[in-house]
Image (tube, rainbow, N blue to C red; front, side):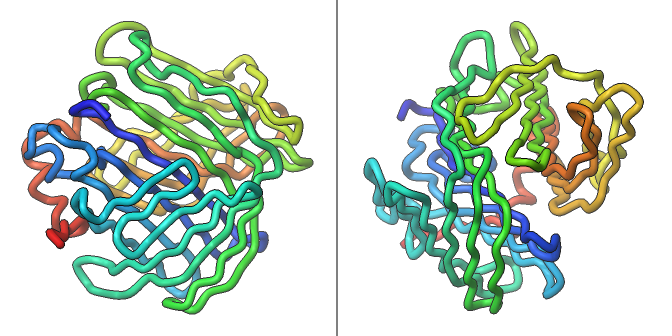
Length: 300
């Protein structure tokens, strides 16, 4: 990978009864890393991490420990950072987690398996220079979660994608809003609404079914959402007359918010996972020194 580059794999899941949720992001060239930023973005593989977040009735847990190149092992079907790993076995993604929260050192240990119901082969440019790409690998999936610490076991719907780029994201983008909605009946929809720093903005609207590749649809009008606690602007797109609402804010950071929303899309009321990313906020000097408290770096 080139200096400044990044690659991540993202999984989210929600239990069928709506009581529990999970998000995992595995990073090379961790895009939110203060250590990668302070290094001058020299070596992406020296800044790797597996971020895991659990949500639900027993209290959320969140961990993201950055590690050096020596902790990284990867190949065509596996990716490992320290004690945590991802493995593609031909039928699904198996993930083993052994991480510790910060600043309070609670353990997150266990495993989950994501089983795609359909695989999408199309990847999409997010910028006019084609330096940043998004690949919704398995937008329709099932997930099976077995955690030991905390003790959790549940099944539900899942989602799997990947992003990659050849430069720091904040060089290319001002902000974005992304969401993936469960339309029911074996269908899902994804929206990517990107404000470019240079060149044209990008708006992607895709509808997925068990046939595989997504089909483009005409994006509906912009619809506002309340700002986050850190005053990060949030918005989505919804059918005319639809009034999307925040069900729960899952993550609230100075530059980023992840939420569960209810929206109206393609004629249906649908639950959705939504994120807003403010890269102008990330570029400010005061944000970077705050991050090590939640994102420690191991030197062994």
